[in-house]
Every structure is written in C-alpha cells, then in structure tokens.
Image 1: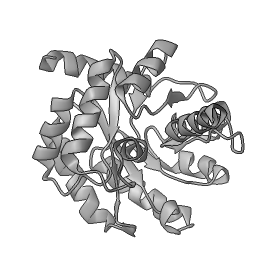
Image 2: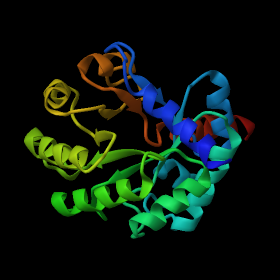
Image 3: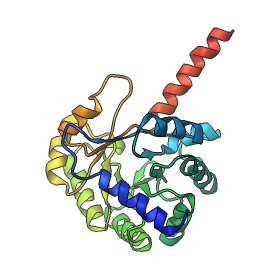
Image 4: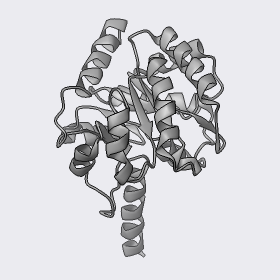
Length: 245
C-alpha cells in the first residue's frame, strides 16, 4: 500500500474516535490472526485492534514474550487480510528507538498502536515516558494514531489522580487517545472529566461487567477487549474437541 493509502486509513481511524454520542463508543474487537480479522471485518466492524496477549498465545509464547520481529510479522498478516484500519498492541515498544518503531509499524500496514507505560510489571517514570512518546509522535507525524496505555490501576495504584497526571503528560506529548487499563467502572466519570481527548476502556465478554454501551455512558470513547475474543475462541474449541473424544 502506498503512503497515501496509509494516511487515508489513519484519517478514517482517527475520525472514528470523534463526534460519537455517549451510547455509541467505538468498539474495536481484537483479532489474533488473519482468519479472525477477516471474520470481524466481514461482520461489519469499521476497525480492529490487535491484542498482544492473544497474538502471543496464538504463536506459542507467553504474554510479553513475543520477539519484536514475530509481533510485527503477525500484525502485517492481520493488516494485509482486511481493508479496515488496524491498530496494533506493541506492548512497551520492544526497546526500539522511536524512528525504528514507527518505520517497522508502518511497514506492517497498521495505522495505530498501543504503547504501555510499564515494563515487566514496573511502572515507568511518567515524564521520561512522555518524552519518549513525544519522540514517537515526531517520527510518526500524522501517519499513526497513538494510544497511550496507562498502567497505574493494573500495577496496584488505585488513586485515579495518578492516572490523570500521566494522561495529561501523554496527551501533551502527542497521544491521540489514552488507555487507563483496568480502571474500575466507577472511576470512569472522574477520568472522563479530567482527560482531554478520547479514552480507551477494556470491556469484558463474560457478561460480568458493563456492556460497551454502558461503558460509553460512563465515559469511554472506545472499547477494546484485550485477548478476550481469542480466549473465548479457545474455550469453544476445547468444548468441540471434548465432544470428539
């Protein structure tokens, strides 16, 4: 795909995040391979967001254990399989310099990425991470949609003010969206009031948490599901396999 085609897709993807009503957040299911991506695109979803944990499981690795080259190759297969925009979960960037990270992601055909602010379970210094995000933004220009994941809640920091502080730094650094992963649903209105721009929230597929519509009404601009779909698919396969025995 030429650069103009990539830019057109990222413009479409960016526009999907804006002008939405609270009862209509952007729902981005997570394909773990090309076949899953085709199914989701054919179902009518306007864009997709790959899950690093789901891809890791499909490639035989533990979460966080996929080598960078294998993750980029998996994202490329997914992006090549569909016409809709694809955003990629790139964990914490695999230690790559910003320009190399951007160049390698653009080569896959993806139009966006998640970048998290912890490494091996430890939160990064927020100002240093914001500086790094600013370098990624400078290297990408307007060619990529940057979703800055905030890991405070996931790392046991329950105070929402810490998430808000990081969100402000990351938005100022050029993030298009922030993702306070595992934020309690009850904290979403406070986060929504204190964050400029779109907010990504993780939804659940087991019926135990709020629906995507309810998350939107609480403040989510977009809803993703991490490896939830891949794990549900594995559970269905396990049931089918058991029936064959």
